[in-house]
Length: 610
Ligand code: G6P
Image 1 (spheres, rainbow, N blue to C red):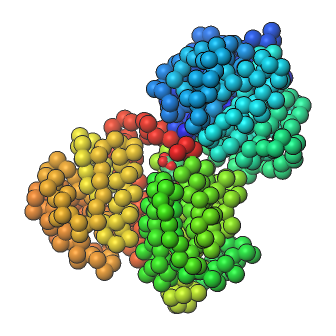
Image 2 (cartoon, protein in one colour):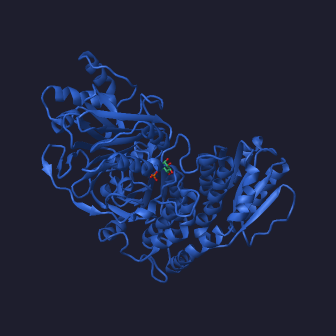
Image 3 (cartoon, rainbow, N blue to C red):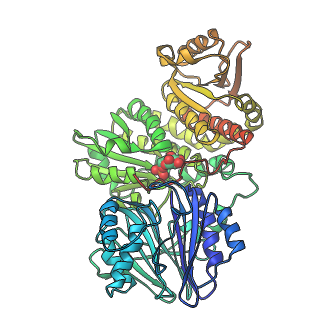
């Protein structure tokens, strides 16, 4: 999703902005641009379709230099990825704007501005902001007042960075619905979509709140709330180390993050388990009275986080004895609901900024839920700030667009929640002890699965020339199959579908032939024999099967069947453990296909628009 960086400094800001853009690349984008004011108070701009490297090349040919600047990576929403649609957008050479989000009433504003003689060079919604700010400045407002007047006229969601040619040394930033952070330096200040962009220059941050407008100068930062009143927002020290967003020795962030899972899971569980129980206070002091009243759970999330919710539903119902519904946020927010008494509203999100999930949470506040609880990886995120209760997954920054360690740590967090709620319902102390023992062993179990990587890399060759594939699982492994298929399609662009194995005969079997590899996940559970019968149906149609199976499961060796033995684990944690080989499979297929693994086409890491 779009990324914003801005800087006001005594030193030249071009390199800071470029480095910031590179650090925001993980969010997903399709063009990039930069505008810097020179000492004579003129704004110069460079834009390029494609990667930040293309912008860098354009800057090498025609450098920009100056002390005040804004830069942007754009993920196209209104208008194709072209130079003309790339940000920054400018009004009459005087005002430059970068924007993340969507201005819903831009057509009306555009008509009005055209009526007032303004012209437009792009198809974007953003250009109205530049022109509107210009219009207010032309009637005498300074940059701050012009941005305040403009945002009061906008419907929709935005994070904005704005500069004006005749007010050098000043940036105005505004936030509503899309994240924006201010980085504090000494005699220099910065703005960005997230802290990663600014880690090379500062670890001190102020997070803007909804409706805030900030006046950012070299020596001062003044924040005004939505009513225009000047307010103080707390300064926070980021705990993310600058190296956390480096690739280390790995070829891709995704591979690094797959391999970090064992450590990340250990972090998620650290200090939250005794020898045989989940510690009672890990959801905070407010949790106990809320948890005591709960009778059911509603989970809402998007993408990979939604798959974590689907797995958790099995756990809530089978282990905790609590009814659980799971829905994608974009659907949840647009339908009517009947909310039974005592329902906990649970959101799951890596970023905590996904627009649909956030909107669903806000909607849920008026629907009579008992409380909201977020399972999230980013402590400063909107979702965390707006939820009653929170469990941080502590996975560390995830840069690869295809989510890996965020997913498995979400699952670990969900198991903690299942135990905390379950012991008030159907979960016995004995079952909890079994679960906790499995959790203690989990980081080591994931290490054991990661050791399968060379075998999986070999298997990946079979997929390279395929256009379609099918993933099968049963029970809690069906969402694992969904996640495996999502990983493969996201990064290798091979069409991948997942089915509960029992549904095979109701449609997808018609597609099975030698050109469609079928991947199955076979833990050693009560559904194993049923799954084996489903796999026979595939083999009988000449399909080639790749089965990731618990190492206790026996398969008769035969043509058309490849079995990869996965070290056996407790049934409850099997979904986490079986996810890892599917991540590795997708990764190695994508590498062989030569796709952009960490930044797959058309996708964004953090989807901050609807
Ligand atoms: C995007 C990302 C996915 C992610 C989804 C939900 O689609 O590409 O990897 O699962 O958003 O993101 P969240 O931050 O809410 O977990």
